[in-house]
Image (cartoon, rainbow over all chains, first blue to last red; front, top):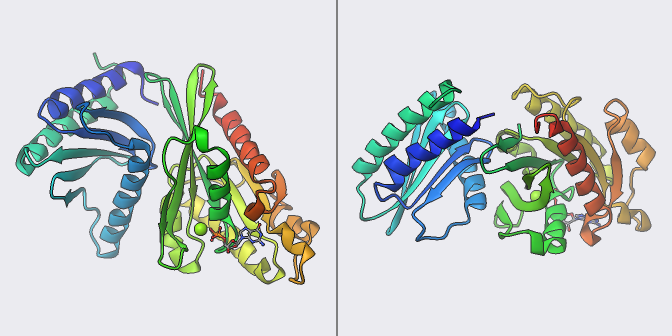
Length: 131
Length: 201
Ligand SMILES: Nc1nc2c(ncn2[C@@H]2O[C@H](COP(=O)(O)OP(=O)(O)O)[C@@H](O)[C@H]2O)c(=O)[nH]1
Ligand SMILES: [Mg+2]
């Protein structure tokens, strides 16, 4: 179970790297579908509970497909829409970071910001006494 | 494992309705969705085939209020029952906290009930979970068929087939008209909460 300072640090990482960069919604979740942290820019509404359940199912299905074709994993998944795109990235064995962003941000920026965030979260997960 | 968030004071619990295809798992969730409409903030999500059979899962979240200062959110899932979908069944079980096993009381389904329970045992093993240790409730569904010409299994027989070793709470139910759907749900919630209670403080 994550403690208060770990959760604070995860929230901080998501806010400063992703939300500040203009990403609309971010969900950090368990593969089971449970949500650990969720953030948004306050503009767009999202049913994050149902979204997380579907995201977990989606990622799990793609993960199982990877195994069928002999890949250990597809650690990254990306769905492109006309106005909104969704980026999925595995953080740890059991957790997933999902970012939704609009067409004003490039995928390159998103990937960069997500990578920074993941690095930060992994550090937090490994250290319960994070400041 | 239930997700306990000490910061937002939230507990998220995953309960899976498992059992042979066409046993009534989806019907249970549909009934719960109707009865608890006010506590359910979102639409029920059903990933189904064109002929209305569960393809991946049904999903229904709802809040049960506060326990020890934590907001408790229950997430109900069903699995696809068809034999060929075991890979997806296993995916849905990831992180499960409690299980309702929905058996079909039709005599013709006897073998399928047993096979499904055996497969549940194996699927849980892949997550290092033990069917004998996880919160579990049995539901013998379609009890209304006893009044019809369709041959059904007696509850003693079902208990012997499915519950003689597990010895978990069991309910006769008729999900189609709601019979014992809510008592089944309340039972699984209460034993699942009891099992995570120790982690709450
Ligand atoms: N007679 C009777 N039929 C039921 C009952 N519950 C479900 N059914 C029917 O059984 C079929 C399969 O139900 P469904 O919920 O889709 O099963 P699932 O595959 O386990 O999700 C449907 O036609 C339901 O209407 C019940 O209590 N009594
Ligand atoms: Mg179904």
